[in-house]
Amino acid sequence: MSDLSEPAVPESASAPADAPPAGLLPPAVRRAAAWSVAVILFITVGALVVFAAVELRAATVPLIVALLATSLLEPVMPLLVRRGLGRGAAAGLTCVVLVAGVAGALYLLVNSLVHSAPEITHALQQAGDQLAARLGPLGKSLQDTLKQTSNAGTSFAAQIADGVVSGLGLAAQVVTGAILTLALVFFFLRDGDRSEALVRSFLPGKQGDLVVLCGRQAFEAMAGFMRGTTLIALIDATFITIGLLILDVPGAAGLGALVFMGAYIPFVGAFLSGTVAVLVALADGGLGKAIWALGVVLAVQAVEGNILQPLIQSRTVELHPATIMIAVVAGSGVAGILGALLAVPLCAAGLGIVDVLRGRPGRRSRLKAERNGRPAEESGT
Image (tube, rainbow, N blue to C red):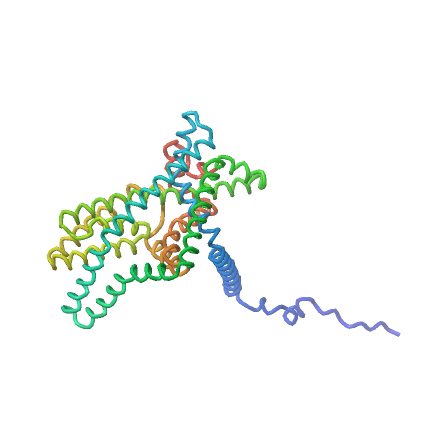
C-alpha cells in the first residue's frame, strides 16, 4: 500500500486567510490609529489629574500657591544663609517678611478699592447711561452689563452678611488654606536643598537625573513668571495711576489696584482693568477725558509689551501669546478666576518639562551655558 500524503501547503499561501484585520490596513492608517490611542490615553489621564486636583482643591491650591511663593522668595535664602543664619531661621524670617508684605499689600489694595468703589460704581452707571443714549440697543445691553458689574460687589457682600454661617465657613477655609500655604512655604524654603538628594535616593542613575532636571526647569519657569509678572504689574499700576491722577479721574487709586491685580491674568486682566478706567473717565469728563485715559492705558501697555516683557520675562519664560490665551481660557473654565491666575505659571512649568524631555534646555540654561562658553546641551546635565 503506497503512502499517499497530501502535498504540503506553503505557509505563505494560508497567511492571508489567518492574517489579523490590522495587517490589511495601510501602514499610514495603522500609525494614525496608534497615535490616536496615545492621544486619547493622554487626554484621559490629564482629565483625571485635573478632576482630582479640582476635587482636592483644599490641598492642591495651597500646594500650588506655596510653590509659586517659594519660587518668588527662594533667592533670598542664600543671602540670609551667607550672613550666618541657619536654614530654619532664614526660612522663618522669610515667612515673617512674607506675611507682613502680603498683609500690607492686601491692606493697601483693599483700602484703595473700598474707598474708590462708590466712585467707580457711580461712574460705571453713568457711563452705561451715556452709552445707552448714544448707541441705542447696543448701548442698552452695555448699560445692563455695566449695571450688573457695578452691583456684583454689593450683592456679594449682602449675601455674606445674610448667611453668617456660610460666611464663617468661607473665612475658615481661607484661614486654613493660608496657614497650610505658609507652612508649606516654610518647609519648601528650609528643605529645598535636600529635594534633589531625596529624588536621587528613590530614583538613582539617569532616571533620577531626568526627574531632577524636569523639576528644576519647572521651578525656574514658575519663578520667572512670578518675578517678572509682579515687577511688570507694579510698574503698570504705578504709571497708570499717575496718569489717571493727572487727568483727575475719580477712584484713580482703586483703578490702579485693579490694574495691579489684573496683570496676573495676561491679556484678559489688562483689557478689563483698562476698560474700566476708560469708562470711569468717560462718565466723569466725557469723550475727551476718556480718549486721554485710553491713551494713557495704551501707552503703558505698549511700553510693557515692547520693552518690559522682552527685557524682564524673555530670559525665563518662553510662552507664545496664543498658548497664554488658551491657558487662561482653559483655567478659567475649570476653576474660575483662581484657575485663570494659576493657568499660566502651570503651563510654563509644563512646557519647561516638555523641553527637558525633548532634550532642549530652557532659556535660562542656554544663557548660562553661553556665558560659560559651553554648548547648550551640556548645561542641562
